[in-house]
Length: 270
Image (cartoon, rainbow, N blue to C red; front, side):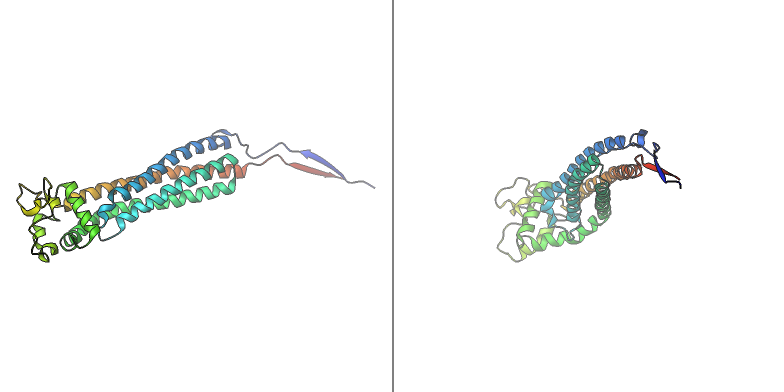
């Protein structure tokens, strides 16, 4: 009677090792570490631009009828904070060669990509609406809200001082303002912030030699459009960087997945 003999045979063959040229795990890890560093700096830039918009330009938001301008800034702030968190996850995933973390990392890159793409597109599309929105709403805001809404009054005065302008379309707008109509004892014809040299009650004279005679609409329009260009450029520009990150993380994931360690195979003999 023959006995069953099991002879172990070690097969040294494998499909892919971790060090095969430009698709090796070590190479991809090195490139992803560099990408994460660049991505971290890009996230700081996105966060900085978003915060700059909210802090420096929030005074003029009260003069706009929609929140699109502010929404774009907050989207970039959220994206920037998420980038900083994602870079930490990416470094851990790459260092430990953790496929689960790499999937999470890739998914978060896609999420940030969508956020920044939306912010960029909104910024560029909104530029076309800025002119019509300002023309429709700004004159009404100047003439009806000045001295009756504290935040808008402060925004109007700040705008007129900064851009050396007076009124929405021109200084004549103040002649029809609610502020003067409901205060007949008021001697000023324009707010003091219209004056070339601002002093107490300097607005009693509305002659061009004393006040700025250009309207504020064009100045604010240029400012907002320039800023929207920056927001859109930053949002869409960082999107391109993230495409490389998603490609690299997917390559590393597949390289780790396809790596097959040598296995023992058995021959059966009777």
